[in-house]
Image (cartoon, rainbow, N blue to C red; front, side, top):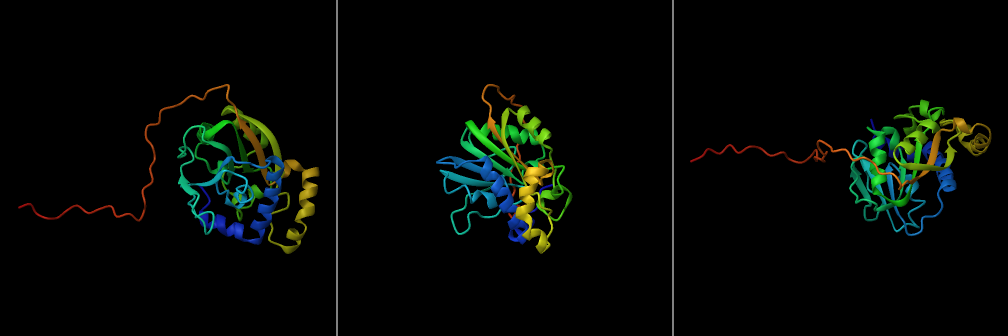
Amino acid sequence: MHTDIVDLRQFYHSELGRMAEQSVSMALASVWARLPEERLVGLGYAVPYLERFRADTERTFAFMPAGQGAVNWPAAELSSTALVFDEELPLPDASIDRVLMVHSLEFAESPRETMKEIWRVLAPGGRLVIVVPNRRGVWARMEHTPFGSGRPYSRGQLTALLRETNFTPGATAEALFFPPSKRKLVLRLRHGIERFGRSLWPVFSGVIIVEAQKRLYQGLPVAARASRRVFVPVLAPQGVPSTRSRS
């Protein structure tokens, strides 16, 4: 089950959330270079990280899963947010250059189907970056942060999933070596802990970050779906049968 949008926003507005965002953003910067005039989609709850990339892109969208909920983004601007099902993205084939998945894959109902859908919307040579909780890290074991929910992954599991769905894994990075504590001392020491963690115990990072490229020399089988899910507004009146008698 997805983490609720209210809990995600509350976490990233907290001091611990801001520190986590800084740690993950530094690792993302080492994996992705600038995105000059490219089309970028953030899938899941990626808005804390999209801000760092969208100035260079042609356009940037924030796709938020229906099970999570959505908020307007960017603030005080025309909305670039869409409420979606991650297995049926509202995009044409080969229409996006890059996809950033944060708080996404670990909640996917069918990770393989989600990855196949991302493969479909990525342009030839398009790139994907996935940020997922590390099953060996302490963040995946603590439920007071969003990284403690969903299905954590090992690096081997993530690499196998990418290869099964026609992606070629590339650069990797790690982040969140400091413990998810709200104590002031821990937060003050986080820079040193992050630096030593990357050097001494990368296998125990809080999150794994993997970049992958869309592979073109092998097609994906297309399975027919019995039905397509649709959004039904919960506040929309359903209508009442007429009670007028016929004359």
